[in-house]
Length: 346
Image (tube, rainbow, N blue to C red; front, side, top):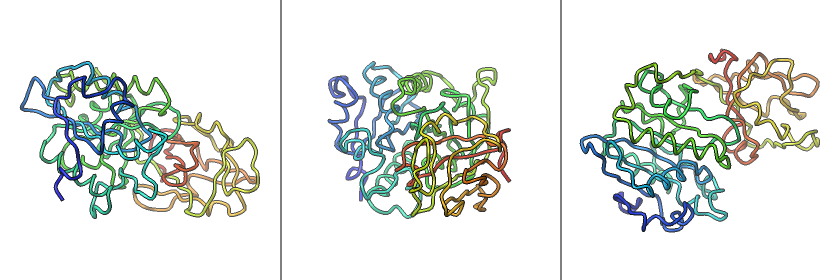
């Protein structure tokens, strides 16, 4: 199957082709789309993916705004819009992935099966053909909270790239088939989590970061004085078992295996101490949860404990990517955790 059968292409689009708003532009898109914009320096290319999840629009909003302004980037720009199909599913920009479809950001490794696998493979071919000097993947967090970046490589180039958007960088050795694993191709690659999908600040952060990404002559060798990034290393990913249930309530109904308070998102990037309760656990106990670290070792007991029917940290931990969306909590994860210091939990 050729890429032309999977992806659509736009080259230096004019405002007339973009619609007056992001939603109008989304209406005009018929499938996953590649956008090329020529830069002042035609010998180099930078890449950015966004909308891999149909309910994470900040990068898409930022790109639409940037394209309407008809800016000329410092180098050639390659933009990849992967999740156009779920984004167009009514109500628009609310569906993470197509019903019965796979999470596109888990498909960037073999075997490239099904429609999402075909899209991921086609995007990887575009990247290989373009040979970009770096790659960003712009997302929104599953819940509200501060922006942060994620990478599988923690070096000066990746920290400089992340600093265009945020001063928090999560380094993980977990491999899930995400686009950021393209860093293994010796192309500095960073995922940007802009904040909540309904947060105007997240949309503005995505736009401001995109402007910096496209206007700086060098984004990989910035003077260290220009950035100061705090690094959290190898978080543990806490997941809900397949058949387990979750509710978000101020008091447990007794019907769910896990109950979190509705304001649990306020814990994002905060430290939670062992005496503090995160929520309530059902009769099945911690057996409804798994906590997997970068070494693939099950580590629930190192992260969580039960006291009087409540779930507590087993040690002082820093949490992030907490969501109050039960569908995402079940299909993706509950949250990530590191030690309060930012170091891995062992």
